[in-house]
Image (cartoon, rainbow, N blue to C red; front, side):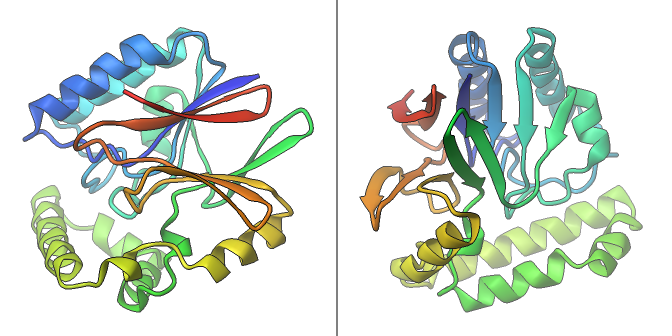
Length: 234
């Protein structure tokens, strides 16, 4: 078995260079793998599966062609695109994963997650996460018109960017106790996540923890072949 894993693309229609990078990566780096995992924040914002803008349809078409080539696509929610639903997954012939997913290749078990749940020192973000992941909040948001949702999402994004700029960088990184706790809970010795935008291959506390990059500059992505993880650049 083999897989390629990416995270934190933050695709948006105003950044054509980023879209071109995504298109080139998909065309040149995923063939030959059994699985493509997108570990959250494929989009900068996602306001609902009924938002069929030209840009969204272009992304869908690219991913749909990956599925048609026989590569299984699995994705999970990030902190920016947590409203991706079953319809989007149906469009791309993909699978929506839970917040914690075990990828098993033979005897090797690898925990996949976006990574935001590990940043427990960022108390304000964790409170916000609980709010917007609530079913009542989601139902109320999706009941609004597309334009209303665009306006709300824009306001939330601006608020998030302002708060991020005022936070100490360590707060936005993972909490080591949270990492140890989740590794014990799922009984794993290997983990891959994104969110923090700090690509690195950590070996600590008898745990391999691979962190993926965002896509603003050089892209760090992971591959898994026969249970062995590699961190590569694109």
